[in-house]
Length: 260
Ligand SMILES: [Zn+2]
Image (cartoon, rainbow, N blue to C red; front, side):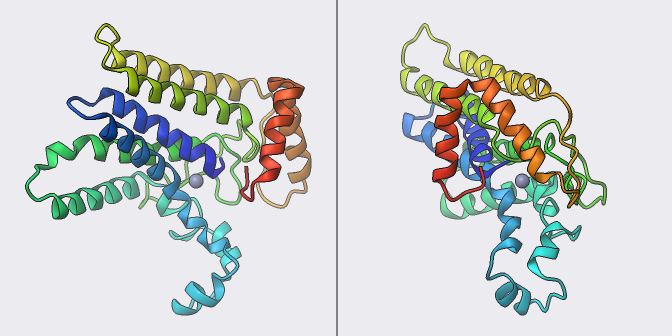
């Protein structure tokens, strides 16, 4: 999945936690959404090995024998889909966040920060879940249970890119949850329950979309099917969204300098 979808899935989790949290101001609930969004994007920091300056910086500093490109598609713990795509990393980074919070807010108990840790952990894990249904690539999935060597996922339900329908579903969920955050003072509205139902619906609809895609995207690496799979994925989007919405999303995709 691309970084925009991962950020949105994290924001969805964060905004859900924001709606579930008790005795928090609107500002604090919005902060929870932001924490989830940042955590959702974090695992892909391991793609730094694809950065054009990687070899002359990190590669030289650590005397790495492989190029950044080789590292990216390899199976080292620091390769893409390695350590950073594990539950261990999610727990470790959440613990570091808790330690920093304790350092800067000494007068507050860890329990008071629990919702922030939950938003962070949940946002991070949402990224890992989002990578499971993508093609196996050279890794065969993600190293979810690091330090075990086993890779999980690579289910190939969907292509890596142009999952515009998933993007729009997640965006709708985040906007809905944020609106709930703002109107939660209306007493008869049980924001937490409505938010939990809405979030579950979004996840369910994403799963339905994956299963309506047809044949799997079993791209491993350099099997000369990259172009045809990309085109098939775009055709699916055109069919699902309709020509007008598809063109809007396609233009947006082409206008940003991110893989989307
Ligand atoms: Zn990822």
